[in-house]
Length: 230
Image 1 (tube, one colour):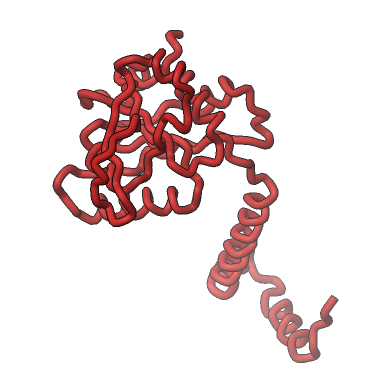
Image 2 (cartoon, rainbow, N blue to C red):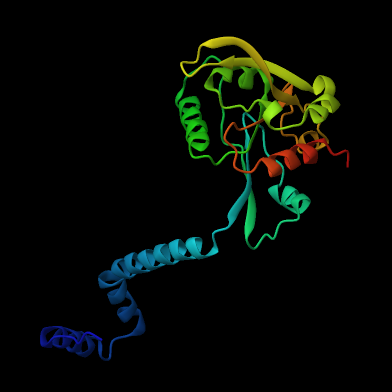
């Protein structure tokens, strides 16, 4: 423990002597005037450090990260966590409904949303994207979406029938190659989405898989979860 130097001791003793016999209210006012702000600053720093340590210690691994693009709101992620049978002390499901793309506009909110979308894909931290058909179709050239033939078997794709929607394939310069691939699954009538008013104004809602998902098994289970009837 660091000992106080003689000067500090003298100051403390003088303050004690000065406050001796003063009323409680006077001592409280004195404290507020000379010590309240430094104490608040110290407490704020201590709380901040504690919060950072707690976040690191209690951090959970992501079992799935789903972007709800242009959604009114997202469902409760805990429901899908239960569907997966996760140990929620170790794993979590992340839903993000903050990405808002305004059609034919590049205001600040749209720009920030696009940057966030790009960042999440670049960080390999996205598994599934949901959105209105108009918006997802518009950004096909970004090459964010997986060819579903690399995700589902031919039998699984055939079983989905007309729900499977094909889109254009683009090269690295965002030029169309002239080829098409199954990129989306129509989930407009998903009970999960409709019961939670996720896309109440969208004519068609699409599901697609991030081209670089690290958790394809859970991305597939999320599709099963969306399509469950109860």
